Image 1 (cartoon, rainbow, N blue to C red):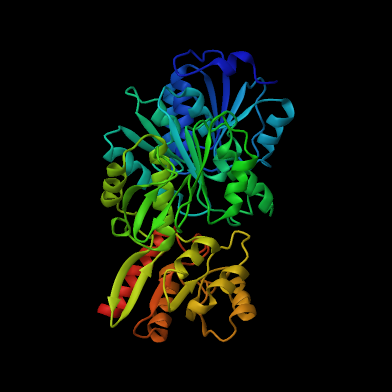
Image 2 (cartoon, rainbow, N blue to C red):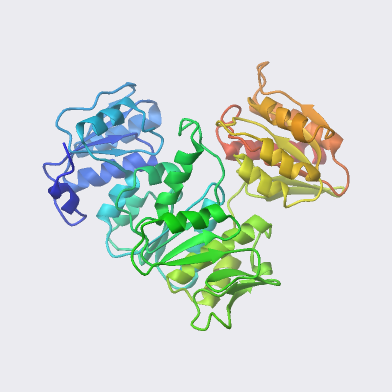
Length: 485
């Protein structure tokens, strides 16, 4: 069945009675999508392959509203007579149910695509990238708030987009973080302004090892952009994405750079954040948006995040003073370049959120002499470029986690003289906390005054911990326990 004209015409103000929808996954986005569709009058079936108390609670709520919820049965078949499937980001395109939908001509939307179709008048400012998305979208939200706008941070962080657009009182603007998974299923999204922060191989397990497919999904954010396509002038691949995108006529390409900005860019002039894109006399002058002292933490990749956020905010008409005030008010989430302790001249830094090699390299480049804690679940990533480019910063490396051998192999190839300490990956029955305690102990022994001990694993955490937050908490607890007694 192909997408019917009726489906394409339906929005938030319409009745969806008679529409038969399947929602795959009952996580945060799946629950929001199912709730919205039931509220609109659709007949909704929710398919979730897992089960457990939290899922059962959500299922009960939706069943009370009239949905049909099917928990805990992998390999669900696509029910007959379905008009649309709304899928959660975790479901890969190769899932048999999604393959069956494609084969039958049933449209498959992501939760973000559904939200876009249900939107009101609020413009969307959208961003993606391999690293820095959450920090940047939260900076953007802070700038929009400082400008007096009622905004919400939504998408891959904050509220599900569907929940935000279904709010009775509409927002003035939405700051939207999008993952490659969410963009894969976006078909009609048309942001006011869009940005790609950076690009490096990640989530290759989801993409069957294809870096090209991953990059193509990231590039989808520029499609149908109305006003400004914001790219990283220090990473030419992002500019090429803009060149190849089909945008709304009149949309501008806006660069951001850590260098002095050319016309049409934001960048740095000494310690000043300068805008030569959104000022009338940009050929001869620039607007001052703040200084490096307004950005915390001030690591180079975080300055780049701030410039990208500023470009999106300026596309929305946010004045320079609100960009500055938003940066000053912003505080990053935990486990993002967070100082745990400084003890006897050694900094201990928790950047557990650095879950891929690109993010880990950005962290390494922020410090001169590093004792690096690395390893975890590699997700199909390669560590050669990370080690080759970061080798001059390494004084020692502590290896932990399931795929630590991949990091060690890269070290043998590109930094053979750097001391390595392998503390295991829990193979002998040790808990994540026990492995982390051994890792911190090895770092204590290796570190000297002037060093930075950096937890920037370059890997996901689920081999030993419930998430990167639990890994960072374990690191901080071990540091305090061993250095403060």
